[in-house]
Every structure is written in structure tokens, then in C-alpha cells.
Length: 276
Image (cartoon, rainbow, N blue to C red):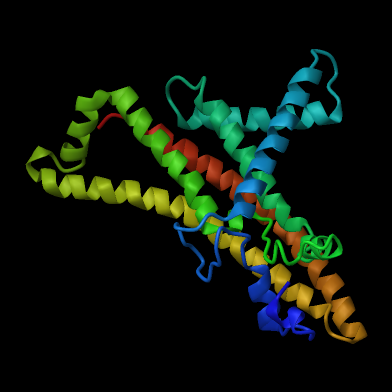
């Protein structure tokens, strides 16, 4: 519940948006990103999406048959084949772990992105009906619209990049590449700086690209929801029409961002397999 609602009057557009962009955290957060604060809603919905994705894959594997597949099995097989084809084209080496990793990343990010289609006021209304609005004053559903969440996933990819660099090239080979590539060992300090910047840029761009797109989409949904607060027929019709159009377009964004995240993960891990 926002301050305005507690005071007994309808919140302004600014108060409405600020309230819906707040997190259920270990303490009050007034910044877009603050690593000293744990956003409990981001953690909960990330785990929720992961569990749902795992159950879907488990159900598909359990019901898989060599006969004519049903719609669900055919859809899952299409997704698996698409991811496997991309892994084959990008990663030249053992893909026994990398292809399932790419599938996990795609399904997980897709499900987290898809939470953006839930009505923006759904959970605040449910909490209010249950009398939990004072216990949970803020709640955000989309984990990928939280920079803490997307950078956390990107950090996992960075760890895998470093792991495969060490696994494929060995400790000595990796250190040599850091100092010798791309301009030769005589420019070792410059090479090291460039390589460190490259790893940092991959990590930051991977997390911030996903966050930026999902955060912008969430803001647009909030702005469209404000149309419903207009006490006119135009406000209601405008909300329905604009909301429907943006939701249809947002489907492409949700799918595209999950695909891009998966592809960049494959590209970055594939680069670790290449020796310079």
C-alpha cells in the first residue's frame, strides 16, 4: 500500500508508478540497483520460474514417446532441436553440458520474462484482500526487470566463461592468452587491460540488455494501467486497446530477449573454446 493510499486518497500517477516499482526487500530501497539489499520478490519469482521450467521439461521427458508426438511434446522437441542446432553452430567441442545449459537459460529467462503479462495490480489487490498489504507493502513480479536479478544471471555466465577458458586452455594457456592476445606478448600490459575490459563488458552488457528491455516494458504496462484510472469511457477503452496492442508486441520482446540471452551465452562460452 502506498503512502497516498494509507492517507486515504487516491495516489497520483507518480506515486502509483513509484509504488509498483518498489521491491519487497530486506530494507527500503530507493535505487534501481543496490547490492547491499536483498530483493525477496526477485529471488522468489526467479526460483518459481526455475521450478516451473524444470517441471515442464520433466513432464515432457516423462511423456516422450517414439510414436506420433502430442502438441506439448512436439513443441518441446522443437525448442530442444532449435537450441541444439544453435549450440552445434557456435560451440565446437563437447556440448554434453553446454546444450542443456543453453536450453535451461532460454526456458528460464523466457518464463521470468513472461511474468510481465500478469496484471500489474494483481498481487497488490490480492495482498490487500488478504490483509497483507502492510506486511508486504511492495512487490514486483518480473525478476528480469530487476538489475540485481539480471546481473546475477550474467555473473553465472561469466563464471562459466572463466571455467571453460581454464578447462580448454589450461591455467598456463589462459594466462598466456590474457597477456599475449591480441597484439603479442610485447604489449602484455595493454593486452591484459583489453581482455579484462572485454570480460567486464560481456558481463555488464549481458545483464543490462535484458534488464533495460524488460524494465521499459514494465513501465509501459504501468502507464497503460493508469489509463484505467481515468473516470471516462475513453480511459477504459484506451487501456483495453493499448494494453492489448502492447501485450501482443511484448510477446515478441519476451521471446526475443530470451533468445538473445541464450545466443550470447553460447557465443561467450564458444569463444572460450577458441585458442588464440
